[in-house]
Length: 322
Image 1 (cartoon, rainbow, N blue to C red):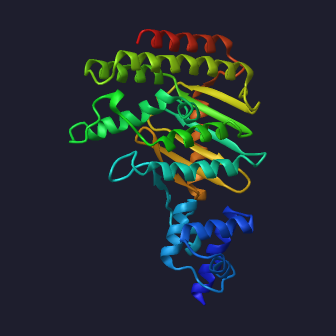
Image 2 (image 1 turned 45 degrees about the vertical axis):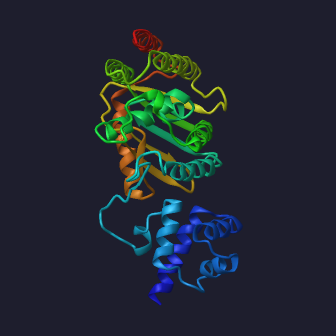
Image 3 (image 1 turned 135 degrees about the horizontal axis):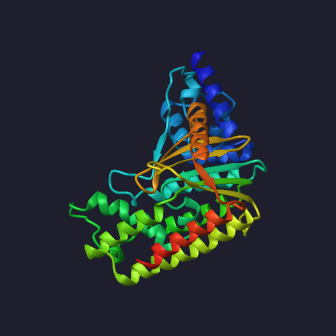
């Protein structure tokens, strides 16, 4: 009886994630490699999901099983995505694909909201830039493997799965479809990036021509960002965007996604990776963090023209000096 009740709770949790029954059955069949009838029997509570099946489904759909067992402990169940014992890149595309699917589903909600507090460039812009995406992937593996036999010492020699580029551009486009977006950006992030690039130049780990291509993408990014803050919206979708410049140095970034059906919080880790949670406690904590940073940041979207001009002039000077 207890197994049936737990199975019923799990089925309800899965259905809250995917509301279309046909799509849900197809997803279950794909994850568990079973026939449709077997999936229907599990969803009708005629057959109980095994523990390993629950783990596989929860992992694929980013579900927290704490809610299934009714845990009352104060915990923050985050799922780490983006890293692998064999390296950052080798298994990352599958995990990125899950994030792609989640974002694509959420933006269908007319009231969806995306918030990102970041020590570097916002993810949506990195993912749509070839050399900046490569830089963020490269720099993590460079630190990770510097003294290893598989060390990545040259930027031009660094490679990664083509699927990552494909999924990144899809995600970038979908992130611009959120009804409302808030960015809080580290005021000194270009200075930090510039110092990292200069260090690699001295170590002869990056060529001048690659630096120039990164500079070109940074210039295009600030031209694009300036259009956004002047109009207060994305030029592609017309969706509202509010950009803040943090007066405090952001040490560790985070983000959250808010919609009718999904509230997710994301802790940014290891340059371009993160840990995602659908737990209510984690989401509420992210809301508090955002409000705290918001109070200590300057809104440059539409308002604060003088502050905005100073900020963009400063960033372009740093880029030109590279």
